[in-house]
Figure 1 (cartoon, rainbow, N blue to C red):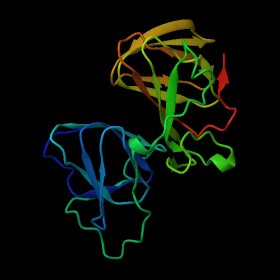
Figure 2 (cartoon, rainbow, N blue to C red):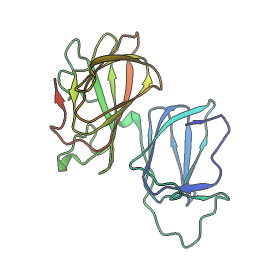
Figure 3 (cartoon, rainbow, N blue to C red):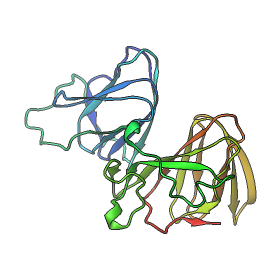
Figure 4 (tube, rainbow, N blue to C red):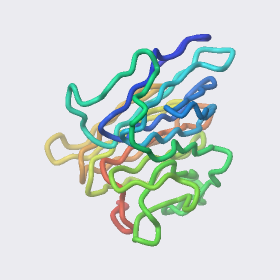
Length: 238
């Protein structure tokens, strides 16, 4: 989604699913039906629970770009819009909007061989399951908690690559910055490779083996969205 300088969404709206924004560029101010503002900048995450009326405006000096994710498939007609920005007085109380700031996410080197030459990379979690319930969460206590999806980012250094891996559930990858070569191994297609650049997206089915190599001259920032939060041990390295 792109929101030009000085522009805003009209009115307020809510969804039947949780909506999650990850900011790529620019500054964004969100607001809910109580008028409480929430500001987010590059690589910050805005977590908007389902049922919360909200809107956003560009509060910076350049066009704002963001990736939005829903934690479920929303049926047409289930979202509601208040175009005048006024929510009925008897609208029930709703959870707060949460901002997960990138500056608060300490990089994790927990993935297999992440500190070794050839495989150097680090990861963060914006949205994850609860660590105490056995879910993989690279930033417990900071990442927003979800039982529906996992969202995070892997940063691969120039000339390095990720260890090929698979996991039970599907995963969508989006290049936020840089470029890379992604290698696949699937039963139906065999082995194949694609170059991916900024804003390219890759849907990876469950159990497919993939690995990414940074063949550029700057770090590769690769956002990942898991269709379900992954439990510790769900990722298998090859």
